Length: 436
Image (tube, rainbow, N blue to C red):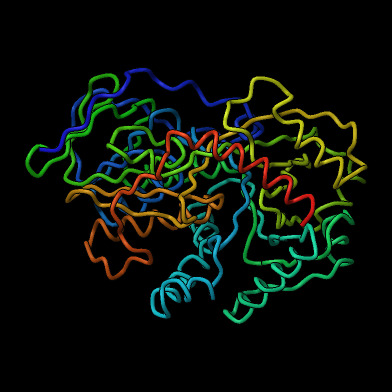
């Protein structure tokens, strides 16, 4: 019998204030797990990966229940920038070089289609989430960044993607700022209201037959023969033949060592009041979204009401005042002088899961127990796609169909010092970004 120690019974706070919490579609009806029950598959985590897994399993006729510690989309799924960008941090040539032609090409194909997966699900299930698919621009912050943009564009063009290289003038025309040296655009990409999208996935999963239990943090996970038993903070038990854990940046110590395989980095965002129409029409033309080539990238977009959003890496501490977001205000003023002095309605942050090698990770420490971690800042498309992958594997058990290998749980060395290390690295990267 495998047995994990009980966790703190405290419940997470309500969804933190943000632009997305203020403007999202209503959440579907969901309640805490109030009585013992048994299902085929238990999914821990009500974000994109967990909800997509539940949706795909339910559509295949599998009995599935989701246990979410807070509300649907409480973690990064309800707090991210809402940019739907295909691919991984690595491009096709790098994937082939690292994994060989067969695996590398399969990874490029699967993860190059993540935006297709998102927008197909939105259309199929009628998810109201302000979906826009007009492309993603990666502008180059330096001449070296322009070479990166050129290389990436050339690779994806050879792969058949709808992409284009942008010179300095064209980049300035699209983005409405002359700060960048050029860049490239990927027309496969787009944007969503991220919390509305998460709630829409939950609603679709429920309609397909899944059960979603919110405010039901799992504090104990143990195996009883062929059945896994999950105990919530309220003491209620869910039994399942198989368990899929999708907690990413909010992974705790439910399973020994798992939380030490990722860096739970903070990503911060600010949003203005709706811009005057003339200003709104002068930036991010056509509804594109953007994130640049910096090591500590800046990502920005407009929302459906014309608010300007700027996001970037935050410090590890949780924000306590507006000073936490001052670097984002400065970046807005640098890129768009016309926005200097504008009022900001919202400031918020959330944690994203970064793995040491910047790939998503799959772990299967015991039969019937599957963990998926690592969104790398591309969680909307990547984690939605991972849900379908996890569901198929749970049903078939065929590892040959997986685009990434199942690996053993390997904690990051000296993980206890990662906050100090990464904080120093952030400062170092910010210095480098000023010069390269």
